[in-house]
Length: 77
Image (cartoon, rainbow, N blue to C red):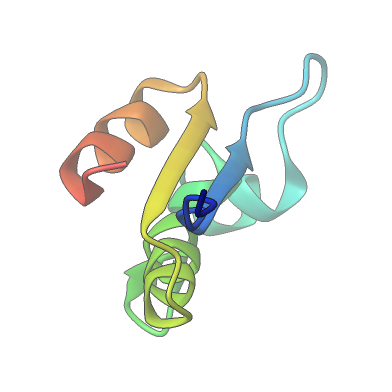
């Protein structure tokens, strides 16, 4: 009996903390740190692309901010 080959999977944690706004997001003028542009692309998109380039087939995103949820949907995560 052969064992199934596991599919490489990852979970990106992109939730926000209660309390004071994130200083990085605040400095960049966005609602959430995952939306901060790094070399022209949101941080969340860069992490997603890096995982996919590394061979991760399934990427899920745990996000609670509307912008992060919307971006995750556009990324197919």
